[in-house]
Image 1: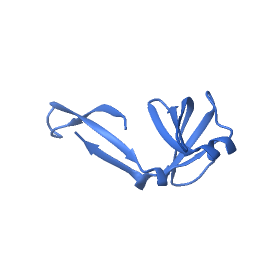
Image 2: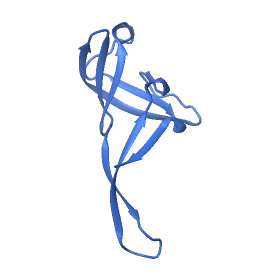
Image 3: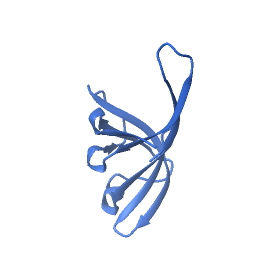
Length: 104
């Protein structure tokens, strides 16, 4: 998960601003990883570059830089089939309903 500071207005008529930390989470089953963007209505797409690959038993952990670090876990054969490596451009596709917003 990635933490960003966001400001929200405490009251629409007030200029006082309150800050809080927000955490965004997307379930692994709700994300499709591919090599290129495709026009699709109602689907969010984040593009990024693979910055790290780490073997963890049968899984491979990918760290993707898409303006913030994002981790993805794939099976080793999936990584080989997609020919994923350091510096590769990848696109994560997900529905808006898959995003869960939490505060601290």
